[in-house]
Length: 124
Image 1 (cartoon, rainbow, N blue to C red):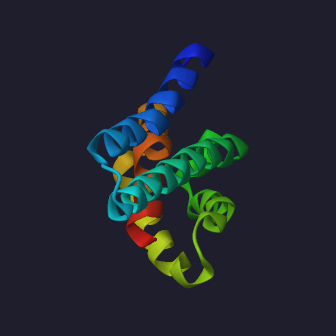
Image 2: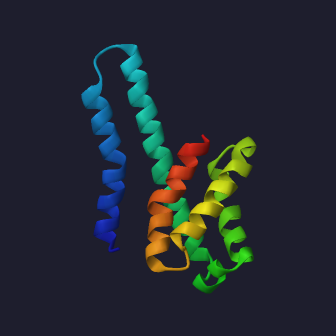
């Protein structure tokens, strides 16, 4: 993915939920808290995607086929969730890594762009 496409994807990832949340909100506090929640979720997803990309870039692709390589990725990502959610997060990531086939280029793109943010949201 080129730099321009990456920036556009990150902006879309952040802006889309915000636009939807703002459009659906009125001036009531319950809607305002919903918008704040959407922004927080969007921010967490963007952070997860960025960190997942950085973590995968630290591990050689051939190591992603090994348990130790996947453990290295997980250890790099576990700071995304509170300590009491680490086991659930590890379970989610382990499943996603296998189903996404993170040792492939397409699999890494799915893992970083979809699966890791989904796991963060799921265990939060």
